[in-house]
Length: 534
Image 1 (tube, rainbow, N blue to C red):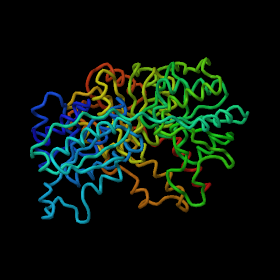
Image 2: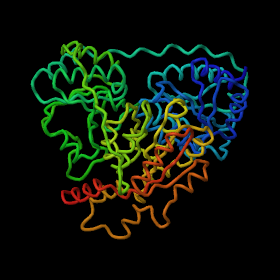
Image 3: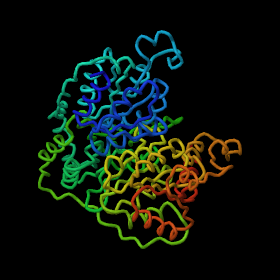
Image 4: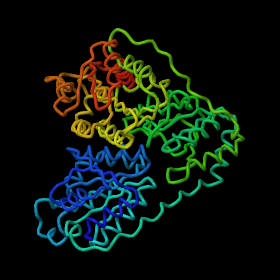
């Protein structure tokens, strides 16, 4: 066999058989071999952040990796933003990056970087990166990457083209993924003592602690000890929520809201979640979003067995037999009148089917939508912005739909960030994915209005607002979606949206609904409050 065959055999033998691809000349041997294989499903994407964002969504939903096929250093660079999000979420993911033949790189052809190599770009957004030194080595790297990725790592293989076509040995079997170590017993004992102290305590969960047995166990501990149950601001992997599941409140994103939400807490215990530092530093403001004097402890990290750590904590707090609290179903009447984010959330709470996947990149309209869908039917909630890079909503919905073809995927997409990766609509149409995209059109990068309020004196002038506005010309998402092959409609009122959502959910295949919602009143209020308190 050749090196390309050895690599593909290593991956598919390890169960890695879905490929999100944007190939070029240096990947043609791999394209040829994938075409001859009945074990690999290729999904063509028209831009590299769609490739990597889709692989992120796929890996989060299945807990197992897809692999990407990317073209040279510049193509890899185009996909780095979504790889950064995936890395911060500990998503299992494998990249295969084709580059010039090893003997040709020194000739400095066009694709060679002026001051570095593809592997230099890969390292900052990969937990593990290797370049194939021979065709046989390419297969060996595939086996190693498959095992490591399954532990929640982004792995990147740089593959010079001569390693694709040269003769190779069959690859080794991928080793079994390493078991995660347990959390330190003394740390669990300390957390149990904090919960028994009578102080106001929050238990903050992240990563796989927001799913299944781990979430149930944490909820029992919280019910037994009186602790409040929180999750990280942008849930990594995904959050199981809705009717019948333990209710969890996210740590607010904005420092002002976070300090208010946590003001009464004296101690916080973190399980698979980072400490709540502000995403950005602000002049004269603290960077830690907790009240002064609040004690923080990391009981278990994402590199440790979170389920086992929570079981040990339940034993230490005598919570194993405690009943976990359950989210009740919210009963809304069908909304009427003006189309707002809250009205959209009410319709989703009424209509979204059980076991749906909800991808949320609603940005400034996100707060009322998250609140309204808390009591929807049980669903899995995905947040693409775990690394702060926007534009992941549409690709993540694509990847989730490929991973879970029997589940309805609903994507809440802000208009500004949606334009970063709008090409994902074409792949949704081509693959006939069952995705309903709801575009929240406010014709602005509205979050930046809040950030500008921190620094401006007086009102923003026309030149400032021109850099935040998406108007002139206005975007027409129905035409954009139709051009990519996705049937689209526009909702003008709450009643109109409710009808269109009901119809879209009843159909198989991708649909898009454009909703002109304006800037959320909550965002306008925050902008004014922050400006006054700057």
